[in-house]
Length: 593
Image 1 (spheres, rainbow, N blue to C red):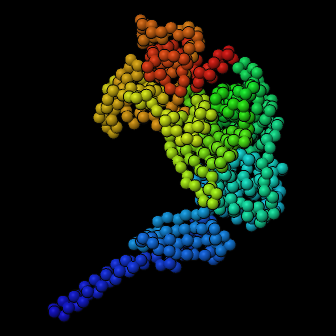
Image 2 (cartoon, one colour):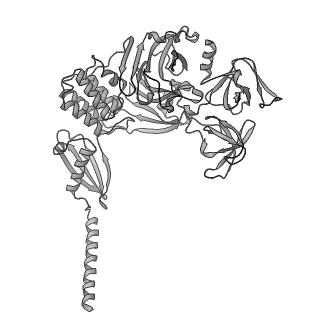
């Protein structure tokens, strides 16, 4: 018994020594992963994450350092010691904490280094850039599709053109992966120029915008034709350009996409089958319009506005047709000695099968300083703004600053000159905000009581501003006690927001009186008259009640982006008004009639 007890004591002592030694080893800075294991992990990163062949990892140099409980493995190709990758590991548990690549990018369409390197490896190993012909262009296009690269319009259209050069294809591929060239990481810029030299290619020159009409035929899942034009227009829109509101305006530039077949997906039926953007000039004034063509209809022009374009400067508009029939358009301004500006936009459906133009990205380069300013409409009116200062004289990069604002993404209400100031100054005070005490609903029923089975007082359209009187408990969400004009009731809180997610999807329709009509207090036979509306007066449509609209008439001027919460609320007969996206658009419709 004593012998067994002695053995137990010895075993306990051994275990205590093992635990102590383990703690000592860790305290001395050793890790669960040896340096050799860290190198193996770094090599697996190179092959599995960054797209290198395993044989290429043998040409990498690896260096490990330890500090404050963290091991850092730095590694680089022996021919490019300036391109440094890093992996960091915890010394206490051996877990990988972070990996960094010199080729990383924050570009929203960045496909990842693995995809970029895979395409580059294929086009160089097959000699496509040195033997540039139709077959090489087709193979390049297949590789781009295989690796799910979001092509720029120039790359997509260029690869079907016999005049497209390999250096432009390489540059446009990098633009597709990394965005504007002046935002590329240093390693990416160097890699691009090395590829040019290795393939005996000259640096690509910027192609001057050409006058005339250019068409590009695109096959694939959604066969379509892209038409771009400058200082002229294609004959199929000639009828649309005879609109009386366009008298005196001259075409500057435009682009449009036309698909071979109508969409079969029900989710796409509210989007225009064919659409485009077109810019006009009248002296120093500039105006941007939408081109819309649904099935069995002619092309028509709908206005976006004059403030959307910069006065006195002529933009170039190109089209980037993508999946799901959501064509993306680029509006670019060449440098005027002060700044180079570009932005992208899409035409989207709103409520009541109306259309609106939504901006997505804004890019500006200050020619004098080299600073880069960018804005991205990321989600329902949330705008991320980034300022990237030019590198200092010693070559060191200055810190990048960023902020997030709530700002409408409707091009119809965008003053581009003012917005440029917002982006340059990250102007928080110009961010979008609702009136105090009000919130915004998103297509929800107004109930008499706090129950979904309670009497329905109407379905209010997304974008309606509601005065919040209080909060009541609910399951699974609380209820807001709200007031909308003379109506009072309850709305489920999950359909109500503070407006920070405002977007084109939450833009109220605007109605215009066709003739002298009456705003009624309710829809009954003996409803008191609240107001006499003259022809052309506008109002926001908040809800529909059979052949009546519940509306809000602004106290002054025309209906704009937001309803006037202190306006006059009442009912108008639906057949007495015309519905549209903006007051300007309705004025055009009235002029056409």
